[in-house]
Length: 582
Image 1: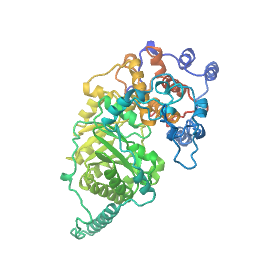
Image 2: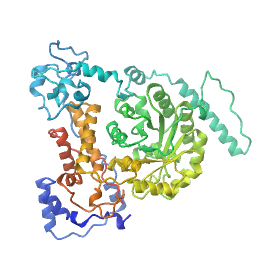
Image 3: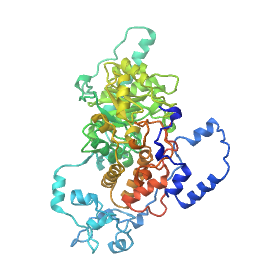
Image 4: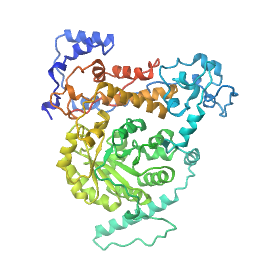
């Protein structure tokens, strides 16, 4: 890392902040005037902030509201969206439906069609959002009726579902009514907790271990480790479970660039067990994800074991990952995520019970510990092996450190040595093939790597590692990736008003990471390091300069190239206030 965490840019691309922003018209006229006014004033002595004030300025923007509020009374009812030429207008089957049911009124008030071809209609012959599609020029007649290419659609449907793990309505109903049968999970928890208490009592007394008693197959069928489904972990590239930004469209992008293993965003067990649609959306799996897992977060074994049983019975997944690293205050203070590292008895019960109920592998993702000067992962690693874990991923920072320090790969090696022969993956600060090789040499016992922020900043990192190169990707190629993400988003969230704005919102969240990529051609000493902050610089063309802008207003401009103008009342605030630079 260069001095003070500053990345060196070739001198011909560097411009002062005020001149760059004013000359390249990357911000609003009002902001431009403020910058020029500030530049003409004498410099103000930098104020020293207290620890409390610094903490308030970093972390998450917890008070941000929705980017856009949809008016249901102006949206077409779902029962009418597929109305084709010559068909009778179907009747709505819902009581108290707040949507529009008059096609003439809807066609008179609907927003203007966006430019471009409807991606969904183009690939399948039928747009799921039909008459409500914002790209409806492709498949809506002048009379305001939907068009379906039946031959193309039948061929598309014959290939099977492209998105798996949709929440079944009957399952959702039984979860909400609390009638889903969790007897197996409950019996397993009661049995294992009694065994753990008995073992702990004998260990503390120094007496020989006693068995708890017999248990029949009628009660519990517990698989041995060798009977569980196997996954070959060695030398795999694992895309980290990324909250908010690790959605299905993003994972598809990473799969195309060579990610071997993908995992859904952290899902809260309590919400899954309540049948919450927004939480079940996190377990959806695309057809291209050949090795896919779900990451669970909870603060007690009852929620975890029930969720393990539920997902295994109702979903198509290859493994379940237990989150032991989430540093968010709300999760930590309730005893979940990294909070479980402080609760040894509960942690053991969570891991044992979840592992025992699964016939698929179970992994854990953990940090070094809770506090920066108290590493505990190396002492937990051998126990994880005994408790039934198939893989440990160690993020080389503590909860207290968040992303403010470099990942400790020497300690990751120590954990891998303690866990042997259990596979261990390392996670932290990989942004190039050089980082990958350096860290693998530093920790040769590590069997693979997990990549999080590095994939968000440059998803082609998986290709770089596999092809052992540094890719000077052009701005046009990068924009094509963003365009592909937008199409995948419209396929996943829909191409109506709500789907377009959902796609825009998640694209903006991703752009808050993508802009941090520094093109290889402007670097004085490539490759880029993940915690180095660049000075203000110009790209090699206008598009590259726009993509390097740290302004959310410019990220919105990028989305408008693909998804049209933002609606009135739209506003976006990035999830994170800080950029996680040293």
